[in-house]
Length: 145
Ligand SMILES: [Zn+2]
Image (cartoon, rainbow, N blue to C red; front, side, top):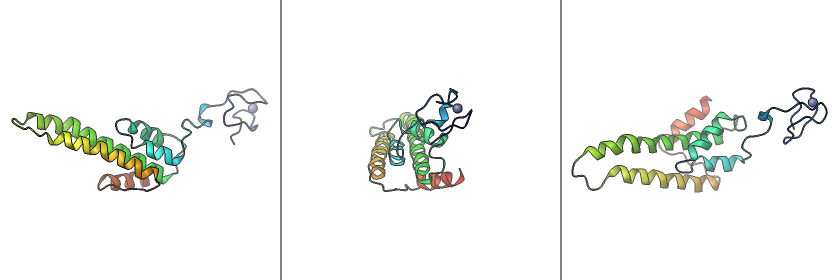
């Protein structure tokens, strides 16, 4: 239960103005994302858009001290970075190779999308899966911040 920034009177989480002095309350007092830790963790792995949730989790106040959610946010973010590397670095490289009929980067990108969905399912059932390399990086990042 937060308190008024002006007079210290108790205000409800959803109050925009203090009932006693009428001061408008800062937006930080209302949680920007009302997700549960598990929902937030699952959303970090949504292919293509999960990184937006991951950044919101890492930048926000709500999960600042939640090591597990932050781990998932970092891992989801690194998974997206891996996808970008495949799309932007490996893709153009393989495109330059002549006579290549089966493009390995397409399969890699598809594999990463499927991996993201797999992580969503695992995280939704409260299992913390640490991926090779990405998981270790995420672990370290979550411990540092
Ligand atoms: Zn007040």
